[in-house]
Image 1 (cartoon, rainbow, N blue to C red):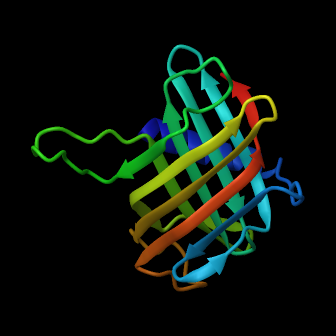
Image 2: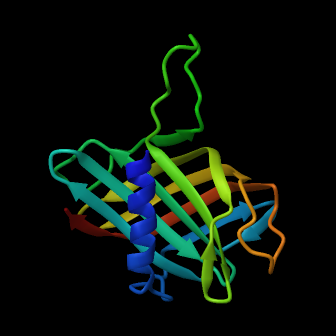
Length: 183
C-alpha cells in the first residue's frame, strides 16, 4: 500500500502541470463531499501505469479551487491497456471475519486542501471503494463510481478549519480520457 501512496503522491505532483481545464463534452465527474455537491474544475490526470512483471495502477487526480481528490487502484498486469471491471477497496487495518488475515487493499484515496499555492493533506483514509464499470482500451475512456471516508490526522495549516471526518459519497466519473504509461 505504501507503494501505491508514494506513487500516487509523486504522480499528482508530476501531472498537475500536465492538467487540462477542458473536458470532452461527454465526460464528467461529480460527488457529494461532506454533504455538499462537488464538481472538479480541473482534471489533472487520468492514467493507467503498467509496471511490467508486477502489475498496473490506475489513477485519477481531480480538483476544484480549494481541494484535490486523488483516487487510485491496482490490479495484476493486463495486456489490453485496461483495468479489470470490478470493485476496488481500501480498508484501514481490517481483519477478515476469522480475525487472523488481512483483507487485501487494492485502492487508495487521498484528499488534499489547496491553500495559497500549497497542498495540505490532513486526513488519512479509513475506508473506500472505486468501481470501474466501463473501460474502452481503444478509445482510452473510463467510467465508474467512487466513495471514501478519511479521518483527520493532524492540522498542517491554520488558514482554514478542516473537518474531523472527510466523506465522499455518490462519486461518479463518466467517459474520462486516460493515458497509458509504462515503467
